Image (cartoon, rainbow, N blue to C red; front, side, top):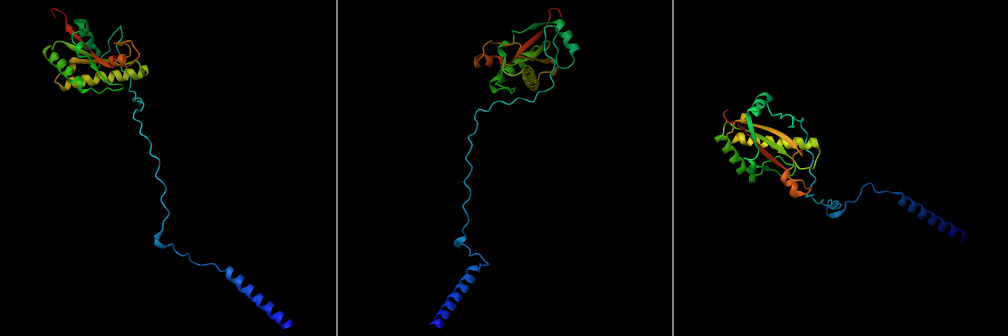
Length: 210
C-alpha cells in the first residue's frame, strides 16, 4: 500500500511539473491573420456646409487722399491748374446726371450694365474738349468713414481709368471721394443704399467769352 501511494504521488507531482512548464512557454511568433486583414479606415469627416452668404471682409485701407470740402476741391494731380479751371469755368451737375454710375455693395468694379453710360460720357467729352470732368465717388451709410472714403476713391478712379481707355485725355478728368457725405437717398434700406453706391459727374464748362 505504501509503495502504491508513493508511486501515485510521484506521478501526480510529475504531471504538475510538466503542466507548469507548458504554461510558462510563450510563442516566439504571432500567427498571421489569413486573407491579409487590415483594420477598417476611420470614418470620413462630416462635411461642412458652405457659407453661401459670407460677411464682406474689410478692404485693405489705403492712404486717405484729400476729399472735397466747401472751401476747396482737392483734385488728383497738381491742384494749381484745377484751381484756375474752377475759377474760369461754370459747374454743371445736371448735364450728365442720367449717366450716374451705380455699384454693387462693397465693390468698385464697374458693372456691364453701366458700360453704355460711360460710352455716352466719353462721346460727350470728345465733342466738348474744352470741358473738364470731375468723377465723384459715393458710398452708402454702412462702414466706417475712413473705409467709405477709400471705397469712394476707388470707384471714382475706376470710372476715370475706363474713360481713358475709351480715348479721353486723362488731363481732362479728375476724381474726388465724398464717402457718405452726399447721399442721394436718405433711407436705411437697400432701396436707398443702392442709390448711394454711385459715381456722379460734374462738368466744368468754360464761362462765356473764354
